[in-house]
Every structure is written in C-alpha cells, then in structure tokens.
Length: 265
Image (cartoon, rainbow, N blue to C red; front, side, top):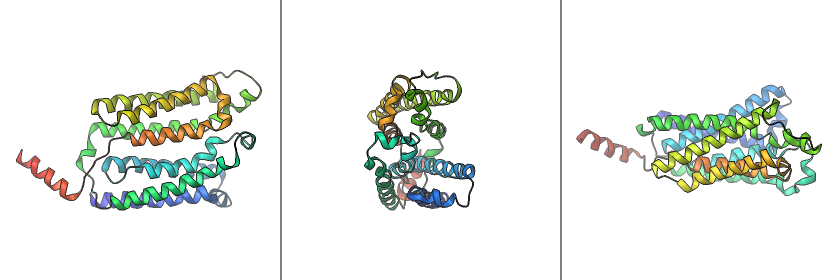
C-alpha cells in the first residue's frame, strides 16, 4: 500500500509540473516537434490522468484535490473562453491572465496538501463499491468536460448569424449530451451525499452551477461570449471534487487501531 501511495504522489507531482509547463507556453514549444493531433492526445491524456489521480488521491486520503483542480482549470481556461479571436472584443485583457493565477495558486495549494498528507497510507475503505462508482462518475465528467469547453466557439457561428441552433444534430448533439450527462452526474452526487449526510451544500452548488450552464447553452448561448463558460465549468469542477468523500486520519496508527477493533469483533 505504501508503494502504491508513493507512486500516486510521484505521478501527481510529475503531471502537475507538466501541465503548468504547458500552461506557460510549453504547448507551442512542443508543437515544433510533435504533430497537432498527437499534441492534443498528449495534452488531454495528461490532464485526464492528473484529474483521475486527484480523485483517487482524495478517496485514499492523501489530498483534497482542490489544488490540482485549480491547475487543470488554469490549463484549460483560455480554451474554454475561446471564440476563435472574437474573445479580445468581448473580454478584458486581464481575463486571460487568470490562468497563471489559477496555475500557481494550484501549485501552492497542492504542494502544501501533499506535504501535510505525506504520512497518509491507503485504507482498505476505498475499495468499496460506492467509491468505485465515484471513479466511474469522474471519468464521465472528464469526457463531458472535453466537449463542453468548446461550447462558445461551436455556438459562435449560429449566434453571430442569428441562426437557430439544432441542439441534437451534428456537433451540437455531442455538446447537448455532455451537458445533460454532467447535470445527471451532479444530481447523482447530490443524492449520494444526502444519503451519506456529507457536504450536501457543496454538491448542491455543483448541481446549480451546471444547471446555470445548461440554461445559457440551451437558451442564451450569446452569453458565452462574455466569459461565463470558463467561470461556470471551473466552479463545477471545484465544487464537484470538493463534494467527493475523503478519508480522514488514514494514518498508519489509525489503521492499526481500526484493524485491531475489527479483529476483536
């Protein structure tokens, strides 16, 4: 267990610095050596692995995941706000400085978190069926997130030409299914947390945030032109991960005591 713990920590650190490197412009440097398609697979692959490691880390008690989510939001902020050049007309220049603030804030928070939880070991509690489904839910969240970050640029042409959007045909079908999927998952987390009496308020905020996104996407997509997309999706990720269960006091000592109690029973 300690070895798995150590591997997970090392993976988080390596992936964290790679994502920050990409946020600081490394993606343009690597494009000189890697084709665009391969770069996209690498970029999203690393982000997905990092996100999954944060979720598993929270379930095992070695981190709260918040710092890592800030880094991911920073890495994707410009993509979520992109209108293929139009964004400079609608959003202030400082709006695109936020990724750096998010990335370095996340670096600080995650570093402190890993240091404070450095002696935590993986508990057998994470091997429950409910936590397995939490991991599956988060894999689906990452998949839906991939499509929704493109909502502003995909709806751009229709909004610009005042043409109605057919939400369940073509590319819009993927966005619509992704929006509904994330809403259903957020609702599932609310129900799960109500049953567990755990962070009900936080999970409700996550659900309301994605409902707000749905309202904009299906009713007033022009609002995406003013920067709502990165704000809403970043808040969704933060509150969604914050609402996941986390094992507390999973130190070696507490596990020994717990095992002794089980053996006595």
